[in-house]
Image (cartoon, rainbow, N blue to C red; front, side):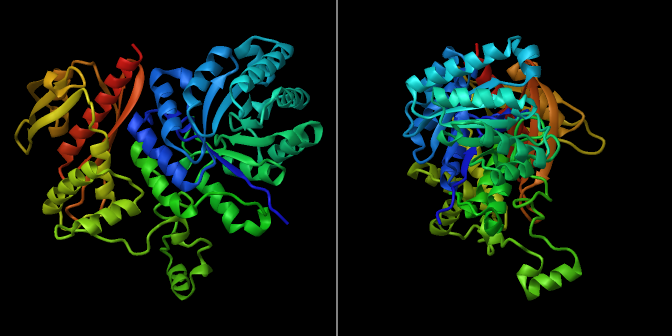
Length: 514
């Protein structure tokens, strides 16, 4: 008997990016989109095209370059939004327009200030218009978890008649429990006459820590599309975690009896990539991809695992792509070994990028005895983020010690345009409470942007006394939060790189939206 397929709809690039400070630039978004395609997701929600010129361009470029999955854009139930969404996704091999409109009385009355009848009419008209542009239409009933079931079924029936291929039932505020959410999906399936003409989708938030459980309950009751994100990132407490849902369906295959297209051995690489690009660390005890997911401290557990892995592990690390034998590189490693590891990590580089990266690797290898995966990823990320920056750190010197005043001198190259011939170099010096503070004050004197440091963290990203340090920080500029990260064997240099990256993000966003 043929098994139903569960469609994985990934919204890391849309809902996930709405996590404060998690914004990615175009190159980073494209990198994530290509990795999601390699992971086997069926639908990539690439962004909210009308929200900003940058989002529109990202959705458009992803539509043009990422071929296997459907590429969706989100839009409100308004012609202007829908048209902008279509203009962004139309280049995809399989474009999708995703329209949302609130259906709970709370949202209808307080946010929309309309009546149920008006909302039903808006929803139907929006789907009809979308269908005139695109074959694949998804409709989301925002706050469906708190919507009146009779009205919700009426809206679902109406939008399916208007042409919706998928109807999404979101638990927008993470309010529902697994049993009641499953019952809601079953009720919709039972009470909507034309429900067999569309796929039931769910989009669960994690405010009560129930997003994955609610999604699985929905599958048990007939939902066949799950909207989720890598590492569960997203608004507030986040979304259902793609890797957790996928592995539950794999490990408990006999129970759920469904199929899906996720290549689970790509989960670890995808998780690491998204974590590094967004700056949002994965908690060490997170299921599937956390650092402790396959760690056993108890002596009894260790003994059992050594005798038979299945005594305490229901998942093999290799099932999610964690290598059993990591290749450690050094200064004597050749191109073949280096580029094989880059490929294994999921990166695709052109010839120019490869040679430049290899030279950077050799420089780092002269400083470090062993090069780990995290070191290589840091080099790649740094290179990918360096194009067309407004400000480029050209020189850095900092001094500090007991009985001395920490001081720093920096030189910054400022690109007046995309052409480096129009660049100028500025130099400043400053004192601070420590070397990093002195560096930041010197940088602030040059850029003159009234930056406020909102968050700062430092951690080692590889092993050994010569480990590279990674700095992750968030800055506040004109009411917006921007993240930055930098890595180096010198933590002052890493701090400066992270600060410069966040500043360039802020400058780039300001240019796009002025």
